[in-house]
Image 1 (cartoon, rainbow, N blue to C red):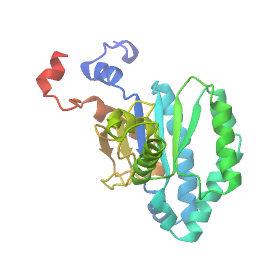
Image 2 (cartoon, rainbow, N blue to C red; image 1 turned 180 degrees about the vertical axis):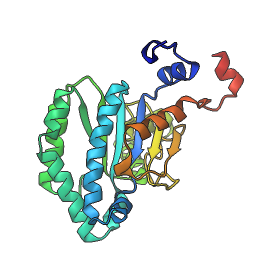
Image 3 (cartoon, helix red, strand yellow; image 1 turned 180 degrees about the horizontal axis):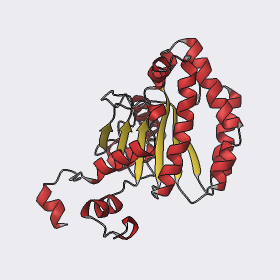
Image 4 (tube, rainbow, N blue to C red; image 1 turned 135 degrees about the horizontal axis):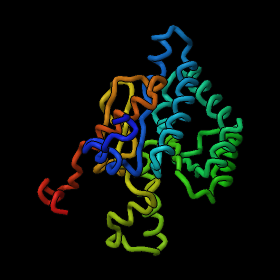
Length: 256
């Protein structure tokens, strides 16, 4: 029997049926990749940007609806000024290239989450232009977390709710989880099913703290620039083999 006509195995069926709808990625290891290859620091981030674009295409192939990328954290401003400036220049360069137009042609919607107060007006304008251009697209949504932190996100939501209480729009006792979620970044989207972190570290680093309540975590030693489609398949296979119980016992999940 030819490989193309072999019967689908149970593993194949499970991988096909149990695909995450929303994937979040902590793209770690760019600097260590640069050191390993004896290149300057920004080269790792440039290579990482190429990997991010490849991952978008891989997600499209898998019909994944949402991809959230942790591009720049609230804490990344603490890095050496030279590196921060290089990252901002790279971010600006990506937005100025025809990359956004390509994503638009692929029917991809772009969203940015995080504080924009410390970005330059030019960078903010380009972010807004990208969001406006792609706002009507109905395909996959790519969420870019820039100057984002989970603590900031929850604090920001709390402030908005406090403003509404102060204005008499709601009562404090009306605030519940659903209302908080409405004010959290991407609260209108499904919670991430899977978080992938590259680079060998095993922590979530203040990323999507509210949203990760029941997210499956996958850690790999692979540095982000080397995270190719084969490595992505490994993460999906690992996810497909997990039983998501959401507080229930396994028997309840199996019984439906």
